[in-house]
Image (spheres, rainbow, N blue to C red):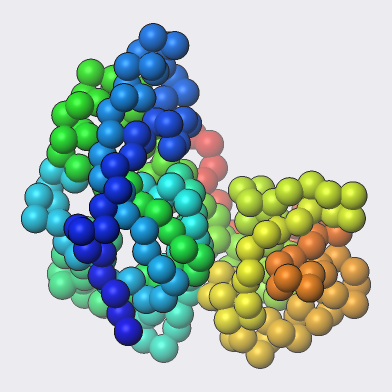
Length: 255
């Protein structure tokens, strides 16, 4: 059953206390004052999530993920890929839905909650209450830019022909954000099944299963009993020897 967010499940939250990074550019006095600003938040259980468009969509900065994990699937024809989202990401799902109708080649998007999430609604009241601290809006814009750069990185990764290497690079990239160093290696505490990994690297599930088997035999990627992942050794250096250039080189190259 698909469950949409309901206003009667709202909980008040002080945004900067829940996400201090949004106020890291503020001085101590400004941070203390800005931290008093609260907004609505709600929780969403695992499963498909149809996000209702707010009545004041133009006045809502977005939905800020405070905790949990989401997966955004995008399908073009029969090809599917996914984006993994978590704490600190800012969403505006209704923007995509409006653009969808004007697209020459439409794509289908589906948002699924992988681990229970808590979302803060950055509504008009929040925007007006924090308007005197442009550092907060700049921090939110940084989040959007960072998300776009992660997406561009994954497009570039999908151009790597060798699937074993493609998977290894993608896992290390995810570990940069979510990984934890242990004595055995870098623990990636995400329960990513083969379907999700196939969506991340733009490959078929069966091919990913075979490639993961090779990586496990090589001892570079291990599946833990709790279904999370362990990366052993150092990040791959084979990229230095790839002859095939990324199609995004001309976009990502410094000016």
